[in-house]
Length: 335
Length: 281
Image (tube, rainbow over all chains, first blue to last red; front, side, top):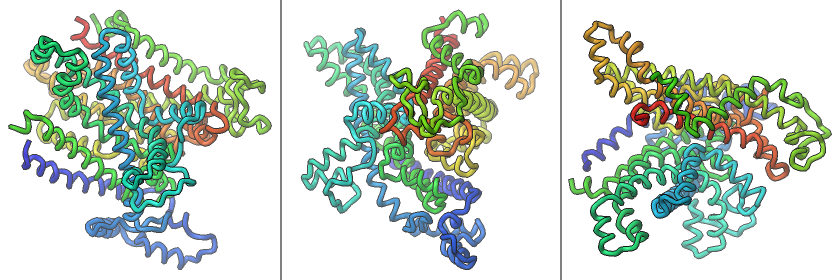
């Protein structure tokens, strides 16, 4: 686990990305349904259609199109979106911050919730709160984010309407951000009413994404906390007269958290993938929502760019998890 | 003791709950025409979005009607058919493909293993939901599409687990004895190793059925599943649109998906414990 290892991991990411690019490109060329046919007005002449085809490069052979596309990517461009008539790169970069805010929010919620539940379960062991937490973790693990989202919409959005169920910010709010990172920017500008409203909109989609991950973390962390509680250093702390809560938070958790986070790290990528559907359900304006729109509109250039963006996010997440685990784990760090 | 009798004797709470859910699902799917109070496709435009009569409505629709006045209870009962068909067929095909590749990768090792494992790695670096939506868009909407999308994406689950298990089994004495007796690798794989992996497969199969039901719901939700027949996912999609006017459109099909998924998960977990010889002792 060293710089060489990380470099190797980075290099491995390239063929994987290329594989993703090839598969996506080939897959999308066999799509039935003509994107040009969907955008032309009824009175268009054959020449107009030809011109459009030429503009979007759809009149060349498939290997040629692939070459052009890869060339564009190397120059940092993804081509033009057909349905939204804008540069794909502009669209992706415009919506990416919204998705990143959602992902990080969900990640923080999941980690806090997971740690809290695991510590509580061990603290109250073997009384009923432990059983309730175990049961909750079991159900959360079985239920994917999609179903949680629907439950939240129904229960907290409609039956007891306490939280908003769509969008990122109500259109009525006066907020003109310079960047896509609304939440960060509103806090930096001191507009806390806006920040609060943004958080309220983030809560349900974030929670839906976070719950399955939190449940996984609870399970793993609980097991490693129980293991830690048997160790000599815990006995020593007990002999010193520390309270049970203090032993759990200060001594056992410190030793158990990193292995547990390492084990659940893989699931972070599931959270990133989950944004596609969750954003669509909550009409949250991020790249996931954009991707489903692109599928419905048969917008090939946009969809290609988005799938590739998600693949990059996936690989980056995996790398970050690896890197963090290396940095945080003393055994590996000093090796 | 055979695995079957062990399974029956070792019935635990989760297996029982999951088994009941599965049995109900099968029963409802088979008996849908006799249980349904209405034709699931029949529209009653005078009674659109009617309140469920079991929850205070008075139009005689037990679980209310949708935006076209179709009876929700009947659509749910018929929707169980689509859910069950997709669950069984998709889980079976994904299992068959993944198990075959996993058996070869684990038993043969070498370049076969390297190749298959690398493909699995690349496969899993796709976002599954996005991939299934793209796939479904490519093939065109329909139940068949849902099945193909699940098989193409989820064979990796079976492949990884089976490969790992075969790596363990390969070192067992019974494989060595079979080799000594002179059985061909193919015979050993099918007659000796496969039966020992079977309990694991049963668990994976059950879990995959639950996943398949969710994927069907997801693809229906984005309009990529069957459109002519009632499906739970299609009902959920409509329910999301009308959620502010009529909660029952979303609540009932959603509850069906949740109960099915929880039931199948419980069954899978329960079976894993029941069939695990180590935990039996």
